[in-house]
Image: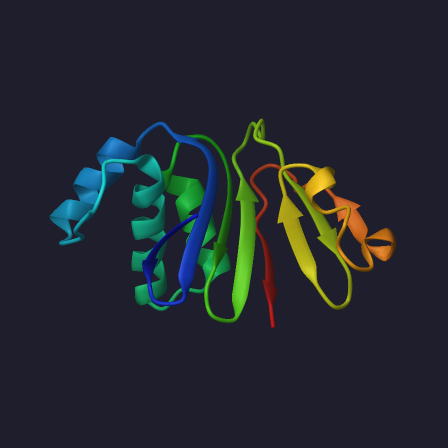
Length: 135
């Protein structure tokens, strides 16, 4: 997990192949960085999208169009979150969804103990599809 903005968090499993190029572009736009890791580049990109008034789903659609690599991402803000996987979708992801809650993990084992999981819809997100939820 990585956070760079108020009420915003990015959880990243994978690798961004073109993070150095995107970092340079963001720096030219005045964005400061605290590390050299690729996750921060994704988090800063999303933070810029949110600051421009986009919602988390739109921010992830924009990220999907710009970032190369293999990854599964979850981005949240104060009242919503969204999930996306790259075109190859080699990084694991499973979602459990009920009328009361939504949870995501890399494998079902991490979700198995959740209350009511036996009634949950359990599914794997499709590649290049942004899934979003709000409160």
